[in-house]
Image (cartoon, rainbow, N blue to C red):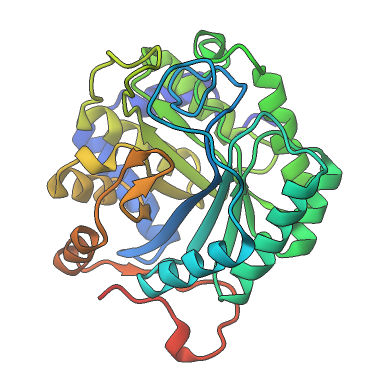
Length: 327
């Protein structure tokens, strides 16, 4: 069933900006507690050496970048990072590992143990590991995983301009496996890769019409990285970001909409506008995979100034002292 046509989404996206933001803020208030933010921490447990050719990514082995391939982290090291993240106000801890697809090997067994360890800290857990099949999704669910991230990145029509080593259909099949296992879907995309407004509408059309709408929608602004094909791309204007956030909020009213990559170069005022447009999630920590992110102290200042607070984890806590707080 098509919930939204492309024409309907285009009409929303192209509304006068103040009207669009007003309408999206009303949808936000009707579905969430205003000012309650899902704070995520993203940890790359295995970085670099990826065989994919994603044009935006410094981890691809196809390009010469400053990123060096690393071995998978130990479970105890990941648990220590999760404990630290929780102390800094994190609600959900996201485990990332480069690669085309999940393989049934020792690394995957380690990831399953990482999921269990993070859950023991009272945090929600998300993974982004590449393509996976229904059986693997089920194993992650059994280990305690809450959500699985697999971004569609852009529209179906523009996709092969950015990635050739896997297809859009591959992406959708993984999301189908995730939904079928009972895991929550985390899926969004990137703007600033040379796509048109129509491509942005197309990406939102795909997400809004998935059989199960995403529980979480990360909106990334391209961070151009030296050595990648998109290293000369210009920074996305904040007004473009606001249109994406607001349109995502209206078309996926119950989704957590996250301002993700690119937040480090956004001013506090620009981020505040995104929250007003309906965003209610961020990544915390000074690094987002291989790109910079605001320091914890900077985010603490923003939370205090704007009256924001972390949304409590849905995972049962050992005691009230374990609940996340922003200092």
